Length: 435
Ligand code: GDP
Ligand code: GDP
Image (cartoon, rainbow, N blue to C red):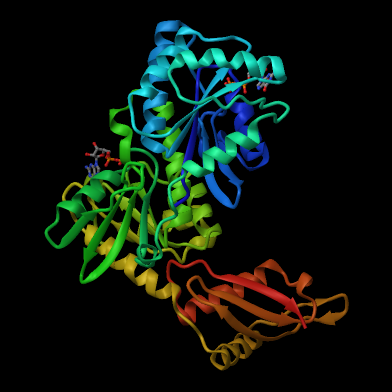
């Protein structure tokens, strides 16, 4: 998992300008995609061979000073929980304010490394003036100009020095299951129900410096790492913060996991944000399981109801009907184990390999069943195919005019592969090369 750096400070000191310098605005996740408030930033950065995530904690703060202090306090607290290193940004133009002092006080009282960054040090004079910020009680200053780049190299050198060591290989071999979904669908109830169950053995994995959100789960003789994206929230007052950080966690967990367990609230159905999470999981080629939670609240359950829900979800995501769906009640514990066994099945499907002769016999057959079209007066021909990789599976096909292969024919091949070989819950990558 990538280390996390948070940028904190009062409004207008230049946090988002620093963020853009570190991340490049192009790469940032800015709000809307996830239905998160616009002016929040989260993205990846890279320096001296180290990659890390950057969070700009800026965003909305109320205008009245006393509420603002409460708001900034909450942001600092969350930043402390979520990150490995903190950049505390102040403004050489504006000098020290009472808000800076409030933030400094919170940051001095804790263990995480903090770098004090007087920004807008555009020239020598401002850089010299930055020494006034020693009054905030930190040992060192890193004056920068986010606008012209001055000082940012030194800051980044020190920042990457403070990042925790990368996690060891052995741990990463254990399959990782990420429980993702919108707030309040029941993720933490689900994780807690598993943790409480005597059939599961659970061990906390101490985080590096970040609060631990992973636990090791042993079920049915097999080990898993369970990534809980629900974590902190409950204590938090500002809803916008909760949603922003749940986005940040979801994105990180999706990148890191082997199987994404997308939890939906059966009473609320499928929304744009769920679709987005599924697309991301598919884009990263992760195994996927959908869980319809709060099944206990669904009235008039008869034998067909699960099937109807399945059809409803697939109708919203027609290209993802390969994803298994389990209905659960995290409250009563109903079928929560089934989620783990289905995830286990998906892990196995992800490793499936098809031998080249087998695949080509099959290919011959399906090519005969549905004719390839003629393009530019030439009949399209797929000559052969091979699975170049498993876990996740990647297929490569060789044909005469790859750029003319219609999308529906691609889907036809993918569907046929699934019908014959399974790959339940596993995105399949197919490339077509000229030969
Ligand atoms: P935030 O509210 O802390 O995110 O601050 P912004 O990044 O929005 O910046 C606030 C204002 O300060 C903007 O007008 C920026 O252009 C300006 N600013 C940011 N960094 C610098 C800098 O290094 N030098 C100068 N002169 N202005 C800056
Ligand atoms: P999270 O934000 O996704 O982690 O959701 P929580 O686990 O905090 O659950 C949100 C609310 O839904 C809580 O009040 C839970 O008690 C309730 N809840 C969670 N799972 C179930 C369930 O299976 N059935 C019912 N009836 N309520 C549930």
